[in-house]
Amino acid sequence: MICVKKLLYIYNPAAGRKTAKVNLSDALEVFARQGYEITVHPTQARGDAAAAARDQGPDFDRVVCCGGDGTLNETVRGVLELPRERRPVLGYIPAGTTNDFSRTLELPRTVPELAEVAGEGVPRAIDVGLAEGNPFTYVAAFGLFTDVSYSTPQASKNLLGHFAYVLEGMGKLSNIPSYHMKVTAAGGRVVEGDFIYGMVGNTVSVGGLVNLPRDKVLLDDGRFEVILIRRPENGRDWQSILTALTTLELAEDGAVTGFSAGEITFECGQSVAWTVDGEFGGEQAVTHVKNLSQAVTIACGPGSAEKRPAREHGPERGRAQNGEAVPDQAEAKGK
Image (cartoon, rainbow, N blue to C red; front, side, top):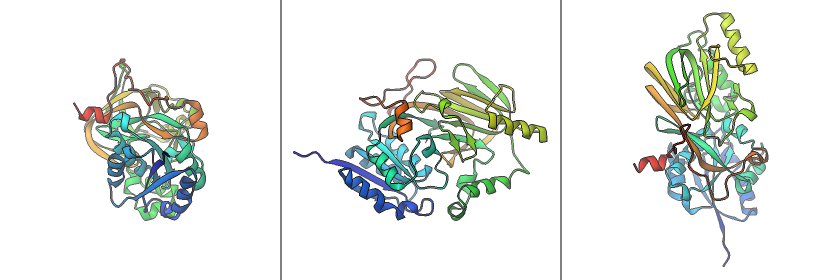
């Protein structure tokens, strides 16, 4: 009996400049050549990718999503609702405006090359985050620029690409809000101050504006990188911020503070809007972020996969800094 490999292809027809739709045949041709029996699912509304990944994913060897970071987020969100042993290997073909996470995964640029990796790339178990129950694959953030990706009209994103985000954000520099926060990380670290921006990430790039060195960002270590930018009072402070972000010399009490942690709690005296993977992620005074270690498995580019391949028998449950197991979303729902 011949065992046929099965692949579910979820794509967002509206992503980017509708490139997911334009390049559909190129991707399918590669998957067919790889020997897959292919099922195609174009998304029709918000939440559709998550539902498809959750309801159909266990029946496929690979689930490949094509769209922006939001489409990837939805697909991961759906997979997280499955028990770990039923989660398929994921593939990602970026077709959005910024495609931050594709840089972290070291994916190639052309659709045929992307499809090659999505269908036959080396699987790697990666961490996923939860910010007040909202899953994210690469970043949860508040403050400066963070509402840009979900408030900028799609037509502007398609036309201007990165510049749409930058231009929209630049218009806000004259009136930058700050938030007095107490930030507590697992292990006892506490940072307090007035911040104009904060991020918890597992990525080397955020909006093409914040860039971290690859050797500092491990996708599967159970920890996130945290960056906090303090409120500038004058031009000299702005220069300190730019210098810190350029050199990545992040002092505890400096203009930009940075550290890594598996769990972080942000406390503020007012509600703060958050974004997760470029989409609105809720608004609250207290936000708890935790790392779900090696929660999903995704096909990475050769450079990323060579650094640390997925375990042969799938990801193990992660460990918090205190040594206790970190439950994933599906396990948490069952409690």
